[in-house]
Length: 138
Image 1 (tube, one colour):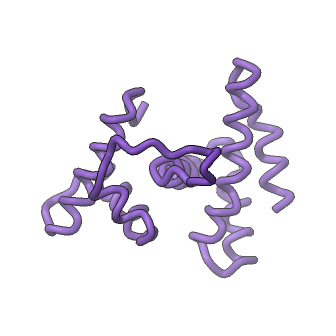
Image 2 (cartoon, one colour):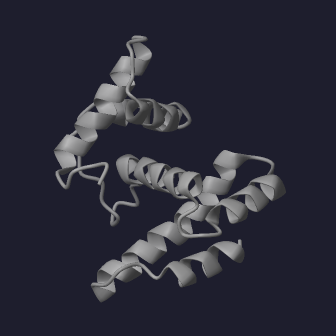
Image 3 (cartoon, helix red, strand yellow):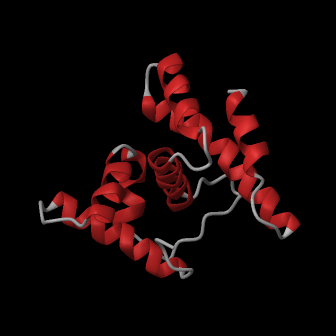
């Protein structure tokens, strides 16, 4: 597992990677991946540099920037390892169709989030076949 279960630890990892990136300090491979995602989301720079204890409420229609960026990292890891099998081809086709890899990730994030939510709700492993099917419909 790349990240721990502790929310504060995870958020601190994002903040540290961003601080190193912005001050041109050496980054580990993981820190570079995190910083790249943060860099692509200027709307989240303040969240990563600010109050890491802030709660983001669904009821308040707030997007949790750490969850959003974590889903980007998840998609990138899945594509890099082609796990589930076939996701790399789906990503390449969607990226070609949209003309933008980042936009393709945004579309795929919705499917990933729903798949993870369903698995958590059912208290079972994510259904990779259903996940791939939903991605192929994009």
